[in-house]
Length: 423
Image (cartoon, rainbow, N blue to C red):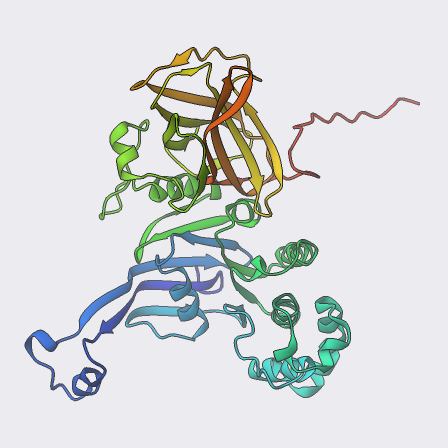
């Protein structure tokens, strides 16, 4: 790649933090006076990362918390300096790393627009020309003339994003900022992303929203514990990320595979430890997890693919005809869909004390891209009375990754045909 083709290039970039036992040890270390056990421990936030982003690309960076994603962005934007390695930037950057970073809380919205744009190198005349466009995009009304300390988080992100995205940068850096804005504002921002892509701008996008990563990114880098595990298409890296999430890799970055086993379950239990539970406890849900179409334990499902919900149920008493159930809810708590073994006409037999049953629900994922909560239950009838033996509310979280969403909660996967009628 020639120097004219790339927007961002990192070569063997490392970032090391020194961890001191006592605050005064930092001062002693500055003068080379620390010895022996008092020497600081070294924490490698980045362990020699290579990264190249071409002009006009939209590139995603994904990874677990603490993987080094935000550290890379801060080094790219100059907020942090690397400990070693080379960083080359080719183009003017606008960054939205932390909401309102650089904003003065005592200033009004308009004053902060001038402050931030000036810091980016714009003259007052250039800012004045851009101001109507920025204010229209933010759409927070007369609040632009009030101190930003009075803003809600939603208004804050609207103004911050409006400034970052409307000052015509060559490179736009975004770190999880869209999670605060409402759905309509997010749609407006993504439409702006599309406009940027058409104009040949470069976008670097860090997010836990894998649906957005899949939909908008040309390529994706996957980080874990400061190491670059790989780069490639969104689907390839999301599949790899799913294995990282359940621990199917080693410290050298080697990724395992194969179907889930009992040992895997002990290693990577996904049950929410703070889930709400209740019931007579005559039957108990001992474990639950999800596998994708390849049989791998995961909390991330690609829309349109098969997946299976697994339940392990132990019986503490005689239970005639147990009914096993699951329900999906959105993040706001709205029940989206659900089913149970009775609806599905599945024979369950009777549970006796000491019995253990393995229950599976296999289906195609039709929900829209997003985050969902899964609740599970074991119920039944005792002498015509409905009994709840064990229910777990919001015990599993599920992320649905989609590169095409439709209206509403689920996709009907319509096949559309259009033909011209002959005159």
